[in-house]
Structures are given as structure tokens and as C-alpha cells.
Length: 149
Image (cartoon, rainbow, N blue to C red; front, side, top):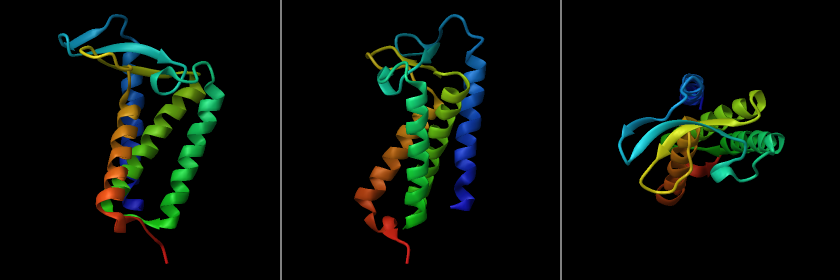
């Protein structure tokens, strides 16, 4: 796993840099008219603003997610795709945890315009892609999740 830690670190760095840059944006920046824009938003909840106004509960849940992921990685001998997925999840969880602890909310900025969808950020994207990779390996490559001897 040690050679994969850079993935989590890169996710945290890009996530925090993008959030820092977005704080100075006062008006939405349309990148693809009618499809996609950048818009600064503060989310005091989690996905789709669930549990809004509970930053310490959400921070505790993030810590549990990171600890649980670490325990799973310690118990199982993961294949390379699973390791990448795990590092994406770890980086995403840490990126949003930093926001919750320092700001009391998560900075979001990516907005899809052609459907009603939540505004999200780099950490959220890494979490979703990482979970997708893990799900893929659980289904397609179950041997990637064999327990360590």
C-alpha cells in the first residue's frame, strides 16, 4: 500500500487548492453553457445536504470511515485497482474532513446544470470514483480481496 499513498495525498492537495481558489469567486463561472459551471457553495451537510448543521457528527463519521478503511486495508491483501480505489476514498474523506474541522462546512464548486444534482467538489468525486473501483473489484475480481495470511 505504501507506493499508493501519493494518490490520497494528491487528492487532498488538489481538493484543498481548488477550494481555496473558489473562495474568491463571487459569480458562477459557466464552463459549458446549460451543462456545467463552477459555483462557490458551502455545504454544512453531507451528500445532498443530509445531516446539515451537524459538522462534528459528520467529522466523526469521516474519522470512522478513514479508520474503517484502514482496518480493511490491513486485513485484506488488495489488488492494484482496489488499492487505487481505497486511496481515492481515503483522499476524498480526508479532504472533506479538513473542511469540516477548519471551516464547519465543506466547500463545493462543481454544478451540473442539465439535471437537478448536488453541487460537489474534488473530494466528493474521488470518493465516488474510489467506491466505484472498489465495487468493481469486489464483483469482477473477488480474489483481489483475499484475507492476509
